[in-house]
Image 1 (cartoon, rainbow, N blue to C red):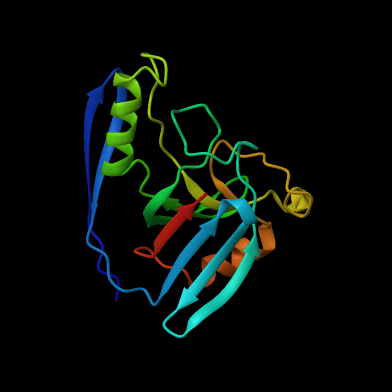
Image 2: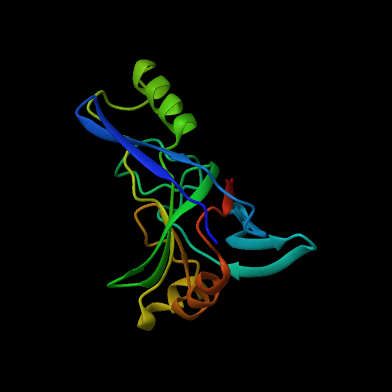
Length: 173
């Protein structure tokens, strides 16, 4: 049985909607470590390493996501909040980006001038597959997303089959 509660509270910050999601998660039995420098998504269970999948991102710049539109993948710890099937790339695991830590980093970057004043934080960061005919992007480390993490279409179907809502995901440089 899955125990999940997500309360979405929308408010406006610098003309952008930021969603805060509270998650009451359970131990799903798995956790995910995404290593951007190695282009790998590793799954662990209670016994240790379980599986490794090659991945790509949005930008070739592997630094932390600064704002919407930069195509960078955020660094941090997230939770899978939704499992769904996307019309283009099939299986998708939506993460709770932006979380409170991301909002604080974003506000700091705005206040210190590290990003333009009209920047928005963005949202919609997910782990998803390629389009079925574009698995070659993974083999060639071709970063094509808008900041999401992408696996081969067939491998994403496998990951989706056993990862559940509430699974913790750590994205590291």
